[in-house]
Length: 72
View 1 (cartoon, one colour):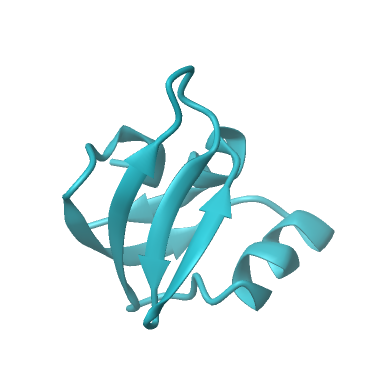
View 2 (cartoon, one colour):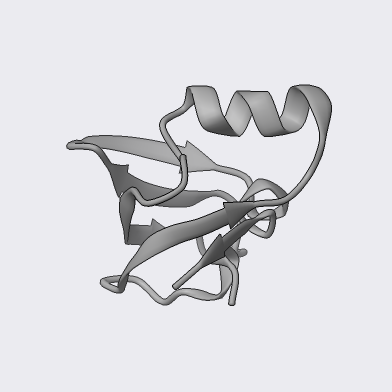
């Protein structure tokens, strides 16, 4: 399952990051690393972006970026 499939209010742990190069590095720099717990706060009406709570702060990411994050 990937992060873009979670519903608002759901929590999960990051299992793996897909993607390569600068995109993967950017996701990791935002705090989405293996083992971290993520909660979905809101999803925009058209589905993009997705607002998350990660490591105690709010983060908005594109749906395409969330699709690269595998969760457990």
